[in-house]
Image (cartoon, rainbow, N blue to C red; front, side, top):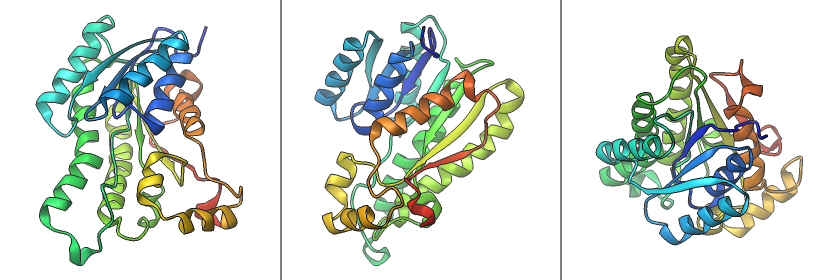
Length: 251
């Protein structure tokens, strides 16, 4: 039996990259997974197939997690599908959307990035508590950018991820007495579509030369850390932002 046998999990932004790896890994550990997506339906269906090949049970739910009504529908769908409860929430939805210096940023840009990277976390955390009891776990996917301010043109993204990290600590204190743990994972450069699209090749090559482990991380490695934080092995771990960056933040 896996360490998450019978647990019900919601993974927001679960269609690809880290979200896909987390969905598959938690299913391998025995969890029943609700894979949320917004625009990436084809990728979400591929993730669902990967979960099923791994012997897992999962459903797909389309929802824009920056909208309260859709978050409400998402959590209800997950609970209705799997016995009326949700044990684990992985707030993975987020993104950089592009790179802009502050002089190029407008109010809509700010709102869109903060909604995607922090409001989504706040909405999902608030809503999941209707279905989560003692022993529940929330894992937020923050970023190394929350620690160091992010790369060029990603200031608002970094601020959104920093807000998520602060919310992690606040919710750990608020929800701890109810038996619910809240932690965050702070990935550095992970080999994903995110960096394929938004990070220049020379920046990635520079990390390969400077990071202590001399490579980027893999989404599966982030998923392994999420699985640990979601499960009982981390039963006395809460309020933490756990770095997973190959040592590059400190190099």
